[in-house]
Image (tube, rainbow over all chains, first blue to last red):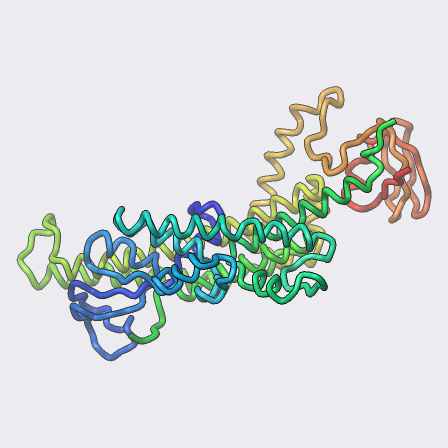
Amino acid sequence: MDNTYFDIDAIFAENQKLACTFLTDVPGLGYLDGGKERDIKKGTKMQLPYWLALPLLYAEHLEFTLPQPFGSRVRNALNADARSVRLASLVGVGNYWYAHGRNVVDILDETQGKPMADVLKDTFKGRLMDLMDQAQHFAGAGTGIGVAHSGTGDAGQEFREGLDQTERELFALAQESARRTKAWFESSDRTTS
Amino acid sequence: MSEFKMFGEQAMGLIVEARRAAAQTASDPSTLPPKYSEMAVQNVCRELRMLDEDFQRTLAIHYARSDDDPGVAPPKPIVCAVTMYDQAMKRNKRILLAYIQSRLDRLRDLYWGAGGALAHLLGNAALRERLSPHEVDFLRQYHDMVVVARAEYEFGDILDLTAGIDVPPKELHVDVRVLKDIGDVHTEQGTIDFRKGQRFQLRRPDIEHLIVQGYLEEIRH
């Protein structure tokens, strides 16, 4: 995912919601809250998608609370063992835990942003070894993550099912690369006289 | 807090479609792109126009009620409201452009995959009915540009830009089997009438395009 203007994944990730509180009245937009009110009143709480909240946060029309997928409970679990957390069940449709996290880091100030960026980085690093290991292992067993296979156990399957979207892409790439390496080894092109 | 129908929500359908198509292409490169979602695009355009009306009206009402000079920034609530309309318009625009871009990327891949054979590509009825008229125009214009670019390298058989590079050729000649009747084709060895089932040894540049288009099959030894 390259986070450019045209990137489908980036657009999808920016649709993740933030729990926001309005710091000003907003005339005429009460219907966004699903109620009958004509206006949004100061102090109203609302779930807004990241892309909409962004300029309002910078202009201090809103404030937001740190999303639960990056809250202290999840952080503690990640600290204990990053591999045992199912990232896929933390965020909703689209499954963009890292991408959403990176977006949230962008709107936090330095003191809050730095530790959160570290959480993302350490989680990724902590899971990468197992990810690559399993991808190599599954290179011969067709494509896809949900493939059952003897010898890896339930823990392995749990881990694969809990992968975030970014990790899934990596998994598929590593799998494909291992498959091609194998094909090259077995092809006649390799033999030299 | 309650759920609501958010700005840009219907545009997300296009993003979901683009994402699914990308996943399908990744697992099977021969998958054709989905049908162009004319209705969904129209609906998003309609939402865009409504957002623009709301934007203009919010400002108009404000300036009609107050004595503010239109050169002075309005109070916070008004600024917040128009910022939201503005951001929603930008969001819808981005999604529309990304949707179109993702399809054009795929069409370019198909074009090169067919060895730059436009007629062959557009002759595929299953593909043709999935494209919008604009996309067909795009392919035609893109093809014209490729033809111009290719001509620069064609002198003395230096390079055929549209030849496949998946399997780099090892020899000048290639053994082929004919999969479909083609008829007369001019080659360096003279005109050949290709009939299904026949085998030939030919100069690669003469028939490269026929392999790419699936008329001939290369026999590997």
